Image (cartoon, rainbow, N blue to C red):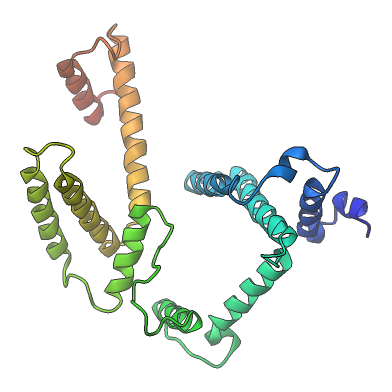
Length: 273
């Protein structure tokens, strides 16, 4: 099949090949000027953005939108793979990426593709971690080395505390974490008399956030999902507050703190939504 034939191919099982061919054409001489001038660095934020948009579609259970957004994530993978293929220093393309992934999946699932045995999903995770440490030759390196590196801080805290809990560094009960949250809250309160620029303000707030993430982990709550739900609830309630004030002829900029608080409590009570 020629390049033109592949680009116009409608055979369902060859659509990934088609997407690869289209990306190659876009980057090739005579292709798209914008696509051709992009670099790994220039589109790195696009990868992050498309991942978050996919997450939004998953949370909304919008499957048609999810299909589109996962396609956009795939576009970013193909884009970076094509640029790597063009770069002699990189020396890999989409086929090498897929090969490495396939090899990794086989190596890290010996209970499926070899004779290893595991009792449950927890055993699978433990086995995965052990194999990963051997593969990366980190048996004798710090346990948390590179753990969650590059992740947003909230997720990195969740990942690090989850990892150390596997070796027993954890509170014996949930109540111990709650006590620690109270302790950290008291320490935050002690900084209220300090100027905002004092490094202790940031330090104590960071300690409080870190401890709250620990409680999320122990209760099997994704902190990002929990905060996202809180954000959505706040947005919904504030929009209702704004509508309530508007119905009373009061704009947000004209409303007093007392009027906002009264409307907020009314919204929370479910009297206005």
